[in-house]
Image (cartoon, rainbow, N blue to C red):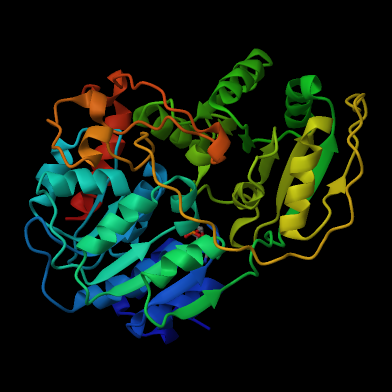
Length: 474
Ligand code: AMP
């Protein structure tokens, strides 16, 4: 199948060609005609499958016709769980719509709300948003939803993991009844199906890989070792294999900082990306990693969600995640768009249970490889035989606490009060890293000083770009 057979305008086809895509990915081949048909769509697709273009291309096609967005209105609303993903989706919209007379905007927390309010005065045909900031903007009368034609819920599984269910339901209730709904999720868990029930009508269901299976192009390995040997082992692996670009996952923000320091002390250029870092620092770390200036990016699960780094060859799990599905998301960073990738997990005896849960979810044993010199003194027990997957009963959806996370509002705003925009203490701040409910704790917020850096700060420039991705092309 070629893109030209997909009923897309020549201007969109030309943008695709410029991007260098030769044929639609499997999700695109299925999603583009389904979205163009105007039906609701429910698609199971991980990041890395090309899902963003899968919904963006047909949406742009649809927007060519119809009335332009009015002031403080949007025609398409895309909700994403994290700031990084919002920025990336915004960039895709800008790239694929480069030759179209359409406008778009991206809004997320962790940066000043005022420029976003100003931007929305012009209206945006496509608005990409994280839920909390969107509700803040709604409470400030900066956005109205009566013109919404299409609603996209991207990475819905992660939205639920991050506790956004109440915000999402609030937003859905504000949307016009007559609209097209598109729901994308890496997995279709019973929770997602319960959410979908109230969202999509008679949807076209699309799945490009069976639930929770890991990309076939990813070679997965477990290296059994002891906890205290992990830092040395990881720098040994980087040097020995001459890895030039490696994404390492840790469970905690503290662990990410510590490992970054350890790697730096070994002469390996590394940066950490997690929710305690300002948006500017996160954007900078990602940009430096993409450009090759930083060789190792150490990330926690939530910060890394949705990171689109082309052809990432190596992913290392410094620690296994508590939630087995996060393993699938983590290794989805590598082996993208058909390229071969490697996912290496350093596993100590304490993580035996997590390993077993992961092997159950992916329904396969991961090959173990002992690294001479780093053998485990505390032996990792062998894996049990894998039980067949059982369908889970839908869990009762938990009430969301007023914690600050990516895309969430301040507690004060959550109660319906308007917060003066100059009060940066109330601007979103991600305090939560691990999607395990057990590890969630409330902490007092501190003002994010790096939010308001002078204009020559590259981080601020990036944000400006994200607020109006079309500004350069106009
Ligand atoms: P996504 O799953 O939307 O995050 O996309 C993953 C990566 O695949 C992005 O870097 C896209 O630029 C790339 N991509 C999307 N569609 C195609 C395509 N048809 N051919 C090659 N690469 C693509």
